[in-house]
Amino acid sequence: MSDLSSALQRGAARLSAPLPTGLVRFLGVGLTGLAVQTMVFTVLFRLGADKSLAWLVGMVLATGVTWALNRRFTFGSSGRRRRHEFLRYMLVTAVAQSVSFALFHGFLAFAPMIPPPIDVILGAVIATVFSYTGQRFFTFARAGSDPESKS
Image 1 (cartoon, rainbow, N blue to C red):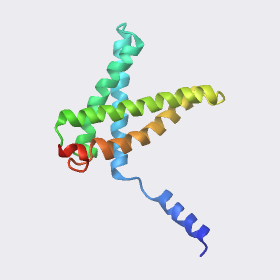
Image 2 (cartoon, one colour; image 1 turned 135 degrees about the vertical axis):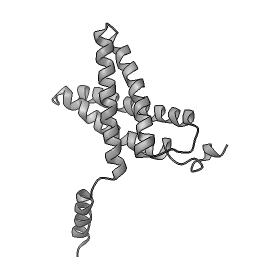
Image 3 (cartoon, helix red, strand yellow; image 1 turned 60 degrees about the vertical axis):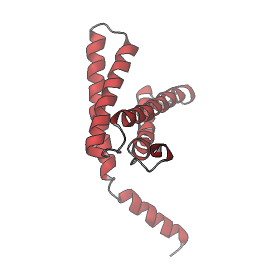
């Protein structure tokens, strides 16, 4: 069998493999967080709050909810103090949201033929990959698996 056909078979096997359970749970938790943020935003906005403030409050509350759900159902406790774990979670979330926001605006500026709702989705998908990786290997990495946790 040639190297190319062997590589194609391995690639096809990877594409047909089921998604990791943790990723499926992470996506479910993310949808729950999106629902929380959307509800909080909608209520505050209808009460007359500034759009940006309503978005920010919704994001902070959704981040708390998703941290608790991911800790319970997706990754488990890292063994760090909850406060430290939550700060790590917020850091990864802030960076992931920044990635999403930057990509959204990048697509708007450099690919104006793409409809803006698609830009939102593209940014969110790429940011989700980053977020899952950061949460799995940084936020919820077991204490003792990084140099910082030894002090």
